[in-house]
Amino acid sequence: MAAPSAAATSPTDQERLANKIRFETELEFVQCLANPYYLQCNSALRLLCNPSHSYLNYLLYFTSPRFARFLQYPQALHHLHLLTDKVAGPAFRTALKEQPLLAQDLAGKQLAHWAGWRETGEGTVWREPVVGEEQAGEEEQAKVA
Image (tube, rainbow, N blue to C red; front, side, top):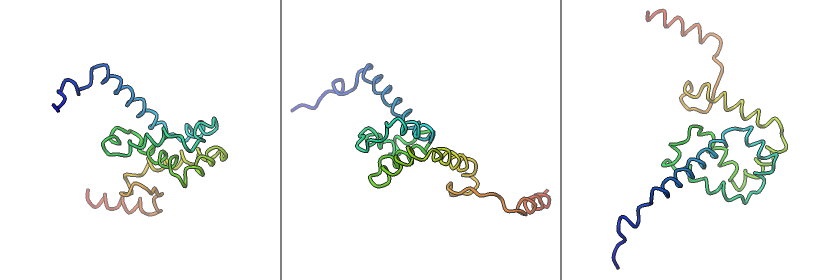
């Protein structure tokens, strides 16, 4: 049997455009999952209540480095994992629906993470400077200058 020709296997311009639009739509939806208020709103509307929602499982392909590089908000992957996890998923969905301050708490933690992830080196813990650290740093800078 002869191998298919290159022309037969390459997508048409219309198919390429359709694939691009589909990818961009899925990327935008995954990035929306980084917003705790968006998650809470969808939970209130019961859009995320169905644990067998296979679309979220389908979107797990964004965890692959090949696709994760397109994400501007990597926190979306954490929320996607929480929503699709068989153990934590139902509890996370219920908490979003029943605890009105959870979204605010998640947003605060996200903001704190963004504010200091480069300073800690690990990217997970943000801390207030200890009293005296600022003065010690200023003294060291004065010695260098």
